Amino acid sequence: MKRRLDISEFTRLQRELGKKLILTDYFGKIETVAGADVSFSKDGRWGCAGVMVFSLRGLEEIERGYSAGKIEFPYIPGFLSFRESPLLLEVFKRLKVRPDVVIFDGQGIAHPRRFGLASHMGILLGIPSIGCAKSHLIGNWNEPCNRKGCFEYLYDPKDGSIIGAVVRTKDLVKPLFVSQGHMVSLETAINLVLKCTDGFRIPKPTRMAHTYTRMLIKELLR
Image (cartoon, rainbow, N blue to C red; front, top):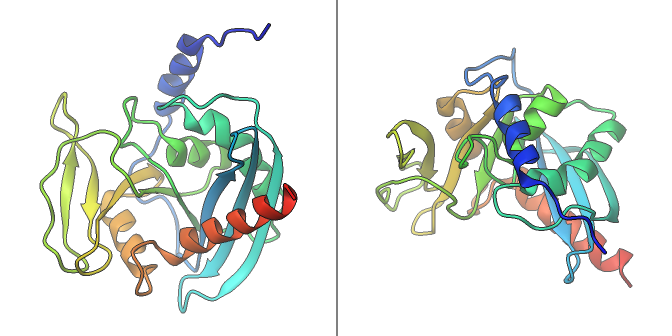
């Protein structure tokens, strides 16, 4: 019989670690940017995390790495970082290049407890991090204009504070939900995401990391 998870303990941990977040620019010159993503088997029992490091100038690939394994933590909305972080940490340990900033396919502080995947990983790694999600989790916003670069702020539904931005990364396509992870200001997060979009909706680092992990999970499960 499976032991029932005590979600209150994970909630407490998110709130405690969230107190350590730095939501201003806390870095030197940014020369490298990484994209991180995790793909899962259809039954959710196996996962593959991938990280791809690029030069910020020209978005040329520098390094890539992955880690695959069985997933122990169940799928629970709002607690995805506990499900994905073990594999992601393994990848970062193996990288020869330490990226200056990491864009995660997930939320930063645009999260019910202001501590999504990008924030959690930023704290664990001690690296500036950005959340760049394809879908909305929390917050109120107005639709940005249809041109690339347009954005509207994302507001906390309880206190009205700014928790991110809804950013149009390509003309006439659905916007992305960008938020600070750790050691990055919202302005910088928006600018970096836009700088990393190369004609597609999804920034190149996370788009390529997703393609990489999807390919690997299919090969590993053959």
